[in-house]
Length: 155
Image (cartoon, rainbow, N blue to C red):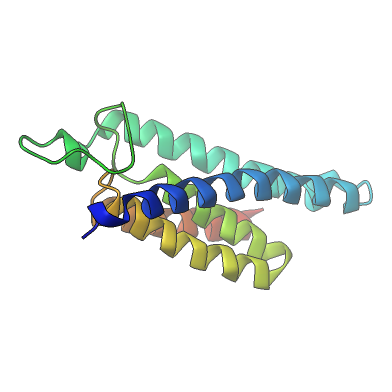
């Protein structure tokens, strides 16, 4: 059944990923234009928290190097095309959308909630598309949310 919906899975994955890659820089631009010269509190946390968290998650993924579903012997080809083996845990796509959801929530709660809902959809799509296990996307969501909350509490 999932193979019948391959075009939809691929399209939703691309649309949500592109939307977040557009939304986050737009949010940073909005904050830069409205921080009234107070860069340290009006802009910096919204760059530092996601940036440092992304680097930490990327380093962990590299070191842990968990296999992807399609790395397993006899596994079907993934619907979402991926060329790289390993580095599956946690899902960096899902981590990113959730830390951006927390960031958006800090600025405008409704947008943060909407992005969080989009994050749930993206998590399902990444598993259905064959590039992550459920544990990968669940961990990505939890880590993205937790690092966002902890980071903004500190800063």
